[in-house]
Image (tube, rainbow, N blue to C red; front, top):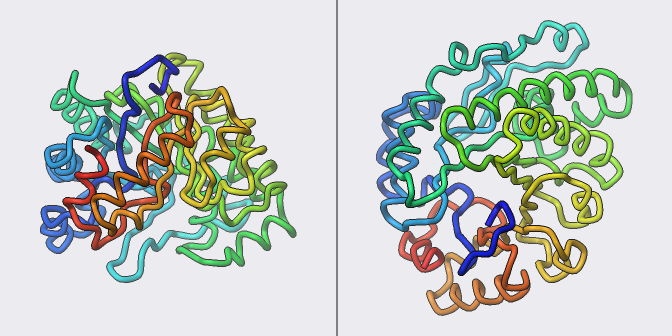
Length: 327
């Protein structure tokens, strides 16, 4: 489906598929800190497989984080329970110039290969192995703020007062992330999604300057080495930017739940679209979930579509309802 081939039905997977809505997952999250879980192959493999064993989605996405490659570039981070990510800030040109390049991911991110290669063997022929990265803009904003911030005050000031620093940081990240995607493919990923999780902080004009060209650079690097591996671009906050997102050369365009699927289809009639049911419908009755899935598939045009939620599965979502969505 991601290659544009005819399929008998839209394939289905969910963002934040491995997550706290599952009791099995919480047993690990209550015992181990986040980086221990995501960087210990045996645990990350188990957490990735839990939703596949339970719901048999058509894609298995590795349990990891968009911030995972940052330490390999010299930017440390941690995920603090109840607080979220805490990232070592990068705010000056000197700090950008000190960043490492991602020359040998097997050495700097040694856990990725055993996670992806083992998962690929486990699901071979039954499901698609999905890798992912955070888009350059999203990673830059996290690192500049040093944490999750609803206004991106520091980043937006850099954007307006010292844009050359932001552009230099984005360019460095794009090169590293291109290498990282290639590494994931080499390790077993069959499709890779670029998450621009903080695209909602950008106006259409800002997106065109500070996100789009760097996403394209990542994909250019990947296609030079793996031209046949489908790439998905998902922008959280893509609604209102559909004409800009249409310019993406990604094989699949992921839509957030605030986007009208029918409108997106009218703007991108020949593109493969992914999404975009509101994940809060997963708290509804099974009948309502099936109705919303049918509406989503209809609005997508019944072809060139990968079914997904338009944002991550929310903690507290009934597990059985995720099963109904996948069915």
